[in-house]
Amino acid sequence: MLLRDFFIQLSENELLNSTAKKYGPKLGAQSVIAGTTIEETIASIKELNTHNISCTIDNLGEFVSSEIEATQAKEQILAVIEAIHENAVDAHISLKPSHLGLDIDVDFCYDNLYEIVEKAAAYDIFVNFDMENYDRLQTSFDMVEELAKTFDNVGTVIQAYFYRAKDDIEKFKNQRLRIVKGAYKEPVEIAFQDKLDIDLNFIELIEYHLLNGKFTSIATHDHNVIAHVKRFVADNNIPNDKFEFQMLYGFRTDMQKALAKEGYNFCVYVPFGEDWYGYFMRRLAERPQNINLVTKKVFTKKTNTVLAVAAGAFVLGRLTKRNK
Ligand SMILES: Cc1cc2nc3c(=O)[nH]c(=O)nc-3n(C[C@H](O)[C@H](O)[C@H](O)COP(=O)(O)OP(=O)(O)OC[C@H]3O[C@@H](n4cnc5c(N)ncnc54)[C@H](O)[C@@H]3O)c2cc1C
Figure 1 (cartoon, helix red, strand yellow):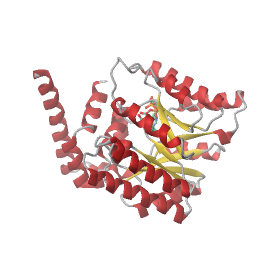
Figure 2 (cartoon, helix red, strand yellow; figure 1 turned 135 degrees about the vertical axis):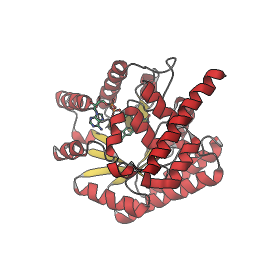
Figure 3 (cartoon, protein in one colour; figure 1 turned 30 degrees about the horizontal axis):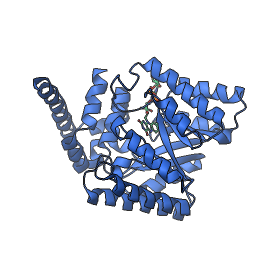
C-alpha cells in the first residue's frame, strides 16, 4: 500500500511532471506510449488493426491550469479525430475532462468538449470520457449527461472502487460504458480499499451492464476477471458484439492478441504525446513490476537522478505533511 501511495503521490507532483515532459520518452516510457506525434500513433494503430484490435486514442495530459494549454489539447484531439477519419483506422477517442479545462472553468471545459464530440459525431467516431479522481467525478458525469442529450457518440467510465458506482451505473444504463477497478487514491469514506471488495464490485457492475444489453467495455489486465466474463457471456447468451475487452497499450500484449484471435472484440487504450508522466506513475502504482516494461538502457545516470529526486520529493512531502 505504501508503494502504491508513493507512486500516486509522484503522479500528482507538478515539478516532476514538467521535468519528465522535458526529458520526454528518453526516460523510457516508449514501451507504454504509442509515440509522441499523431503520425507515429496512427502507424501503431494500423499495426494493431492488422491483428483485429481496435484502439481508443488518449492524447496524454491532465490537470491543466491555463486556458492556452486546454485549447492546445482540444486542437490536438480535433487533429486526432481528423487523422482517424483520413486514415480510416479502427479507433475512437478517450479524453480526460481535466485536460480540457475542468479545473479552470466548467463552461469553458464544456465548450471544448462539445466541439470535440460534435466533430467526432460528424465522422461517426465515439468519444469516451475517462474518469479521474473523485473531486472531478460529479462535474464530469454531469457534462457527459448533458452532451448525451444531443449526441449518441459519448460514453464514460464507471470505477468499481467507489461505493456509489452501482448508483452511477444505474443512471448511465442506457450508455456505452467502460468499467474499471479505479486508478486513483481515494479515501475509505467513499471507496473500497480492499482488493477483494473492489474485485467483487467490479464483477457485479460488469454483469449488471452486460445483462442490460448496452455495450460494455471490460477494461482490465486481470486474467481471473476475463475468464469469469467469458463464462458469464456464454452462460447468458450475450453476443460478442455487445462487449469488448480493453487493455492498455504495451501491457500483456500476448493476451491481447490471443483474445482478439479467439474472436472477442478487443480494444487497446493507446496513449500518445509528451505528457506521459502521471499516466506512467499510475501504472507503477497499480503494479510496481510494470517497471520491467521499461528497458534496461533507460536506467542511465540521468534517469537515476530523476528517480532519486522523486524519492526525495516524496519523503519531503511526507515530512512536511507531518509537520503541518
Ligand atoms: C483500457 C483501460 C482504461 C482505463 N481507464 C480508466 C479510467 O478512466 N479511470 C480510472 O480510474 N482507471 C482506469 N483504468 C485503470 C484501472 O482502473 C485499473 O487501475 C487498472 O486497470 C489496474 O487494474 P486491473 O483490473 O488491470 O488489474 P489489477 O488489479 O492491477 O491486477 C489483477 C491481477 O492481474 C494480473 N496482472 C495485472 N497486470 C498484469 C500485467 N501487466 N502482466 C501480468 N499480469 C498482470 C496480476 O496477477 C494481478 O494481480 C483503465 C484501465 C484500462 C485497462
